[in-house]
Length: 453
Image (cartoon, rainbow, N blue to C red; front, side):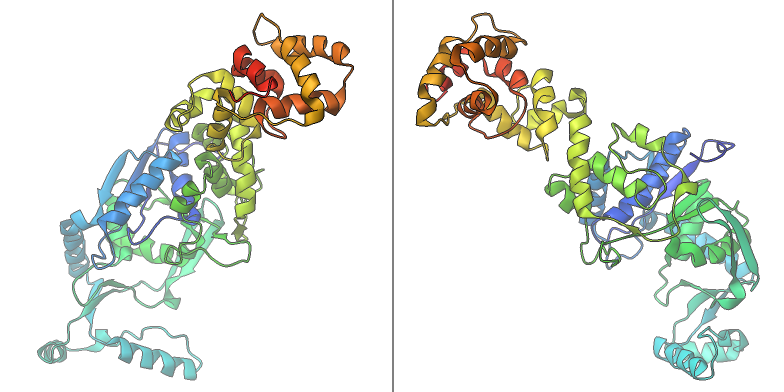
């Protein structure tokens, strides 16, 4: 956990664009924010970055909410940037009054030509602020010709520094950056503006996001200060990549939460691997999100990309199931048509790779099941049926074996394997000591006699 607790309950946010399905890289950011807030009794805000009306859809917003719910992340507040346009209008007006926002009329082709020209001269491809040199008459003439301005924020051109929760002391020289566009030609707002306004208005105290936003932080701190807002604490974590080293993409559908859920991976396993991989903390099963929150340590995050291996996730899903208490899965078992009692879960959980397999073992217990046996074991199985104890309970299996072993003269595989095949139809599985009490005496006797039961 962090070296010291926040001075006040923290306020954090996760701000996805509803333009695609969330993948595990998005989940990493969401979990860091939600679990840090949970760890310190703070507030977690889900804020839809949905001002891009051409690409944002209600269907993707609903999918994000469902995926967050699957992970167990319940936001304290839900906000939509598309419903806050008046606040952005006010911020733009304020920045114009301050002389920090200026109109620029270049087309994208003109800007690209200037960038290429600067590269040929060995200069960085920065915007040259030519728009600041335009007179009022020149701007008017451009607008008469049909040009509509985009609006750029005039950077101070200074060293902006902050103490990063993950990376330590960081700095960005904004003199090395182009003045960012905050308002497009069509009047729509870019994330750089809306995010700052929202963070100020919503009292966000900590901004935890991917390291691809480090440079943005220098710009956003200047905008925050221009608007008179408090500067939050920033933390930039490393990014998840595929085992091949390729980055994750919503557009390409890499490791989407929707797909992982359909494949039967456990939400707690996804959360644990997404949070702990690429850190100095061991990746291991956790019993709850509270337990995972207690392991959040931004200082333990590596600076190198974190490789997310689906094979490791499958193993972690199985390990997670093997440790989950009955209360954590009772409702889901009921949804699978599995009888609701703890003894069954404790008997089978150690043999599951995915929860859905519990339904297969429930059918083994409940039947009907066609037993499997070899002709040479027929007399032995009939003897086993005859020696089944009348008194049935949790200790029935060892009592039965204690009587059957000397009577049959069998031991080891020759004793146990035919019994397992007849009683379960399977070569392997949960301990018979736990399964036999669940199967019951009548069904066990019928299966040993070769009858479907």
